[in-house]
Length: 117
Image (cartoon, rainbow, N blue to C red; front, side):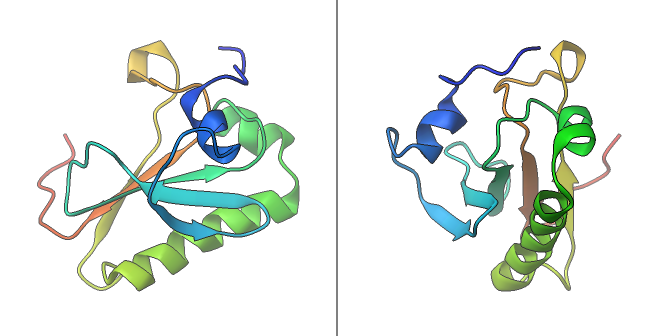
């Protein structure tokens, strides 16, 4: 899957589509999902043009990788789900049903999410 600079997350990053911002730093942007699957459902994305975790882990700088991981922890603490628990989910390509070709993780929590499989 090639990166599409007109994907919805790229448009959000450029300010062309509104969102409810949760977090932002030099490398990361996070916002509430418009169709939440849990009381807390935040999408956390790198600002760089990466399609998937595989792409991000191979091409991102160490600073970008650290920033994304730290953002996840900071948002979880800010949302109060670091103690009760949360799930991180990243989909990649067709078989995982990745809808947006911009690497992102879903941070879900605020309720018992049940078994994963």
